[in-house]
Length: 226
Image (cartoon, rainbow, N blue to C red; front, side, top):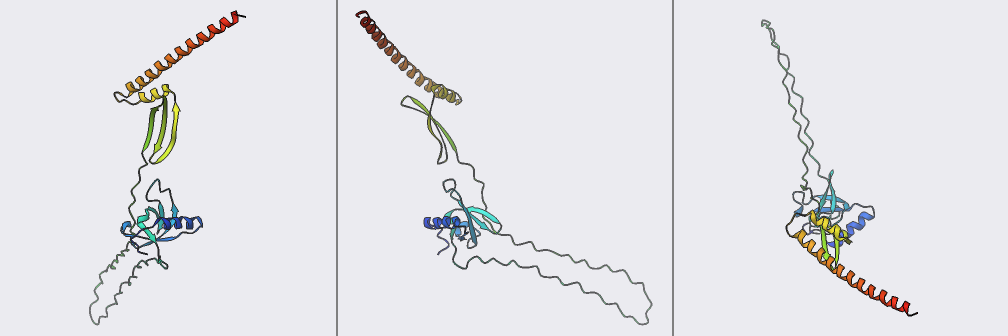
């Protein structure tokens, strides 16, 4: 398979089934993965794709990083050989100077010679190229206060996930929520709606009282006729 195509939906499902069976399938990084393109890693976990596009967690060396399906492809058989890091070459010990053989020469006190210092430089281990992962900020939270058909409702949603379905609240609670929003016209609009509802409720109550009074008067007449 071409390492530049990325994973298809069926291949992602196959990886999910392999993880459920206790296996850690191998994948190869595509060109969109950056400097590690062509390297081989192991899928160790699949997170929620609704939260992030990079929901495939891949172990690469000692690191476990999230990637998107476009960054990965199914590894061909036999892939996954590790690159052998070059070992530092052993350093040869410094040569020891042999004593000088002198005939018929006056003895001169030998000057003290300092042993040459050999600086050992260690080669830093080869740095593995990994994909820089930016910390993801949490999805936005939206709280909605709505009015329809004479009822006030509140709903909450984070990203594409509904945290709370719309549920009914009392008009007094809706007015308290709107009081926290310092936006001209919002609180006046809510108070206008509540005033209209209050007037309609009072009219309905007056009508019911009048009907009840008529019924009670009719009942009193029937009682007197006995």
